[in-house]
Amino acid sequence: KSAEPRGEGSGNLYRARIRANPEEFLDWDKPFVEQSPRIQELLLPMLKETRARAEEARASMLAKGPRQGAGPREMERLEGYKQPMAPIEQTLGENVYKQAGLPANTQAEGSVRSSKVLKELGIPGIRYLDQGSRDNAARIADNKRVLDEAAGQEDIGTQAARLQLEELEGKPLTYNYVLFDDSLVEILDRNGEAIQAVRTQAQLEPLKVPEGWDKVEPTPRTPIEGEEVRYY
Image (tube, rainbow, N blue to C red; front, side, top):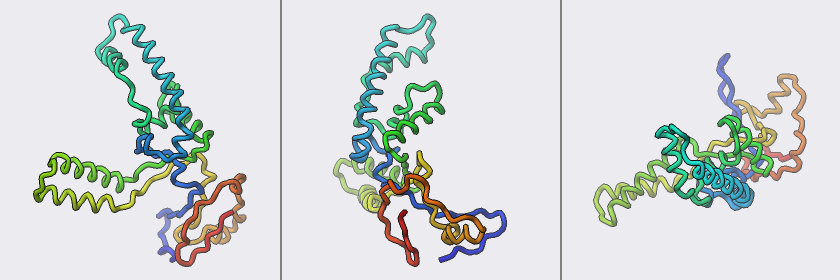
């Protein structure tokens, strides 16, 4: 169904398809143990290497001790180095991404390095819960806390928490995606109009297939009514 006419300067709505399986993306919000088997296989060697470097650096800092005249912040940091690092299995996807970019002098430099490392490993990008699912996840955690604190005792509050928990857990999670390679994006339509028709109307050359798309395994998808789906 075509979109309603849009006024001048009102912008456009595009619909696109990502030529990659969702399970191939690093999940920003999940611990490493809950990442897909593919992600675990690709990233475990890197995490072990960065973990070894981090532990070596921590040991070196502790051996040197605080600098003369060190302030409370430095002393607190050194105390933190005495605590064991969290197991790799508990490392969130956000921190997995950050560790992939080490060593780096700035956060921006680390982000560039992280994206480059993951792309070279064959990971197309990251995904993270959108605002709606993030809110639902927080409500799920709150209801679970209510039930845990109730310790098996039933009242109106726990019954309401259980009902809401069942409802929230039944809703599918939805995500935002960040790609390291924009050639994996196929724009399907603009404002409900097939993109090839839009280009013809604008007297532009037909879209050419980007190099390498023939090597990308397509993700199966059920066509919407009236849509013909083609994979290059």
